[in-house]
Each structure stands twice: as C-alpha cells, then as structure tokens.
Length: 120
Image 1 (cartoon, rainbow, N blue to C red):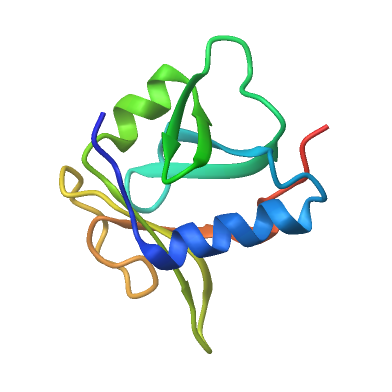
Image 2: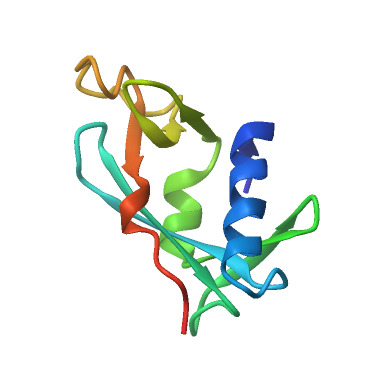
C-alpha cells in the first residue's frame, strides 16, 4: 500500500490522539465506496485495530484499517484543511473521477470531523 499523509493531516491526527487522553492510541480509517467523490471515509481514535484490520505505522502514528479500506486508499493523499469555509480531512484520489462539485473538488472527499469519536 502506498498512501501519502500531508504534514497538516499528521499534525491534526496527533492532536486528536492527545485530546483522546491516550496518545498511544491510533487512528482507524474506514473507507467505503459511495459519496460525492466515489469514496466515503470515516475516522475514529482507537486503542487497537478491529479484528482483521491491518495496522501500518506512519512516522510513529498507528493507522488501523480493514483490507477493503487499504485497497480503496491505495495511492491516495490524506490532507487536512481548516479554512473559513470548511474544516476536515480531504482524500485526494488520483484514481477517482469525482463529481466536480465546488466543495469536494475533483477526486476529493471532504470528511466531516464531527463524525470522529473516541474509541472504547
């Protein structure tokens, strides 16, 4: 798997882990086909991956994901932006076409960070 995580996304994920009260936890990604750009992605802070998850380390950060998510996010770039108009993760997929709408852009899915939850 080849996935790029921008410095701003990495910084935000590390901040989420600190705020969770357990900085040794990891981020779990769950991507499913569908949504505006062709892929919907959910994120959560988890102490460990779920059964069957693959765990990768990215600059010391544990990222857990099921194999289907790993396949969907292969060759993608995960970014984070915080602007007056929106705040959240953006998945830039060079493989996907996207719908071309103004909020997502071509090949991008804006992920609502209100869906983040603390793992149990």
